[in-house]
Amino acid sequence: MQTAFTRLVGCVHPLQQAPMGGVSGPELAGAVASAGALGMLCEFALEPAEERMTNALAIAAGGAIGMGFFGHAVQEDLGAFESAAARLRVVEVFWTTPDPALVARARSAGDALVAWQVGSLDEALAAQDAGCDFVVAQGVEAGGHVRGTQPRAELLRQVCARVAIPVVTAGGIATADTVAAAVAAGAAAVRVGTAFVATHESLGHPTYIEALLVAQSGDDTVLTTAFAGGWPDAPHRVLKSALAAAEAFEGDVVAEGGPPSARRPIPRFSSATPSRSVEGRIDAMAQYAGMGVGSVTRVLPASDLVAQLVSGLV
Image 1 (cartoon, one colour):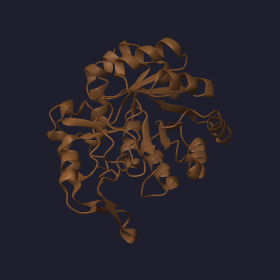
Image 2 (image 1 turned 135 degrees about the horizontal axis):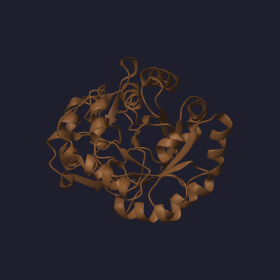
Image 3 (image 1 turned 60 degrees about the horizontal axis):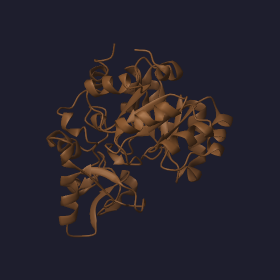
Image 4 (image 1 turned 180 degrees about the vertical axis):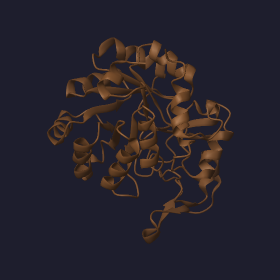
């Protein structure tokens, strides 16, 4: 199905995989891109950004790859930001007010499209004014760190009515029916995170993935500020079971992560994602999950998940 998003990005499907730290490595982003959607890397990972971009592009076989950056940290990683703008199809920023200077820096570095993930109509308008090519409107149903405070459908209606650039809708999307309904409501594309954690190519820890499969519905998630870890007062949605386990855990260090040559302790209530490289009490870490988690019932190849999610589009 062609939309303003697919024509702009060059994708077959109006679908973007969320750039999830500790989860979306080159294998996942590349597989999603190869399947015709927009595959996304995350700014932070164990491997150097250049290496991850090279590997993802090789797997993508000509498909579209992007990289997500955190606005409060990007100034410390401008080299990677500029390299991504020069090498990838999309660079995206999240968590801060849209910044025209950062958009201009991406333009001067390369030909990548620039996107901003926002949580309100005012931020969406600011992203348009800053010169972004498209905007990601995040509803409160989203997993991970949550900028949005409104239901996804309500925010989508408001943003589509006021901005001229393509709008990607995000927050708790995990089924073909939800994808089709969002596109019918005006979204140029949808963004999916939690369901892609439960794929063969995901870097999520098996214990984390199993917890997602066990969850029955969005009622098994909670929006909290407990796992602050460097993001003071930043709301995030996790599994309720993870929060309960972290609260019951006795001790300051819940796990250990990092490369083999530089392992580091992970404090209790850290924002760190439980990836495959982590050892310890995975159940008591930040197990990020959106409210669509009840529809995540089995582990699939990423290409199969893409096909499943877009199967209701005509």
